[in-house]
Image (cartoon, rainbow, N blue to C red; front, side, top):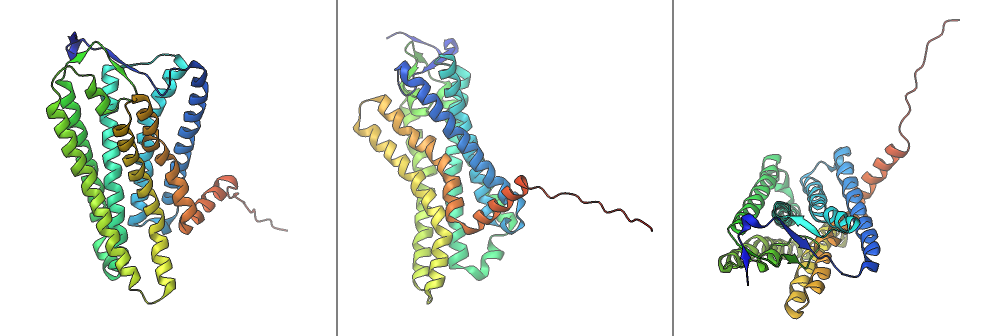
Length: 322
């Protein structure tokens, strides 16, 4: 098979979810709707938290950053897909493809860390309530966010730089709707053994370690809750964790589902369709999970919508002398 050096590669082709032209308008409308819901829902979460002083706590600080991450992750992939469908053009530039690989990795790994940090926050709040304020001070949770972002960026840049050394074959078709690292590596004519080892190690460290941290936190949370004497206290403790646990289950459940589907099927298109469940759907559903299952968030959203729909009028009274 002939191959070209990466300097000669100008673009890749994103084949998308289907070749059927009749389904393209439906896919465009569906993904546009999902994208708009994702942006609007997560923006409302961010605005509600920032506008309500009662929500200026570590838990909601991490939640607002999770919403921001969801917006960025969706914006990295969906708009390019919509543009390609509308323009009937499947191409993406070499630079654009590697940029997509990099940013998808950054925001995916960052979401892993944010979910783990939120689990740690709930662990401290429930298992060590008297020490919560001392432990979760602003210096610590801002450091945790900055550290998570730094690790995510370094990991993504490292993988992207490792792709730059590869040579690619003349067949540059990616059976996906965005440039995923694994799909890009499959197009290389160079030896990708080192890349695959790095992907495996990074997945174990940057997905496995946060997941183990979440499991560890919830084992201790459940143990502490079961020792509570009152049923009211147990219900309150579980209710504060319900939203986060739902988001964790959705994020990791869809991720494992895509991994299993790619292992049991030989069709790249079916894997691409399955990948929608982890790259688009969780980001859209997260705002609904937190707003519907969290009383404080519902109240903050109600106040925000009330202020937007019925802004306070400024009444000026003039003193009149008779």
